[in-house]
Length: 237
Image (cartoon, rainbow, N blue to C red):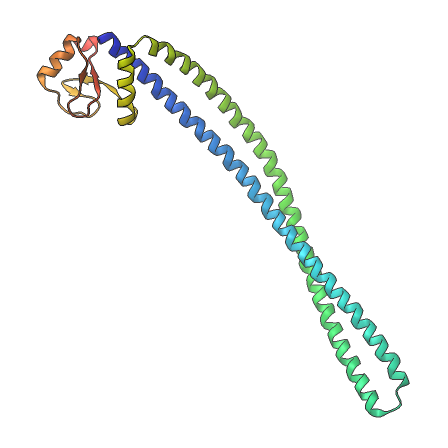
């Protein structure tokens, strides 16, 4: 039994190593996703600004069309003004021309404002596009480093899996099954060393008769407190 227990300890060390590597692998995968999200968020921000600019240009074109219409209205009114015979009609046309010119001035002011906003937005988009290009370049380099780390971990996991397979074959199947059940219930630690009369898993004191059984090493001994498998090193004896 003592040999099997030491083999179980070796199996547990391999499992803990695999757990750590898998955790590290998941961290790298999460970093990869985060990098993609950063690029996507930056790209979406650029697209949103482009949408703002397109809407601004559309509004400006509408104002320019209205300005053309007002210019035409003024021109027609000025022609009519020359043909008017009565004072009343003349005053009405003058009023129309005045109102049209006022509206034209307002439209021109709005067009100037839209042009200034469009110019500012165009500069902002250019800066954001430059930032996006730089980010994508940096991210490509960082993702390459992460991929190297993933490849290395995968090689290590493959080696660990092979070593684990060899170790499992050397242990009775019933004992492996019990180990796996304990490992699942005890946060990955199924077998622990008995040291100085205590269980190193829960630090509780072990009964003397149980400790004597460990010295003999004939049977499987469980900690009465945490139910983990116990083993005793030869040097401790």
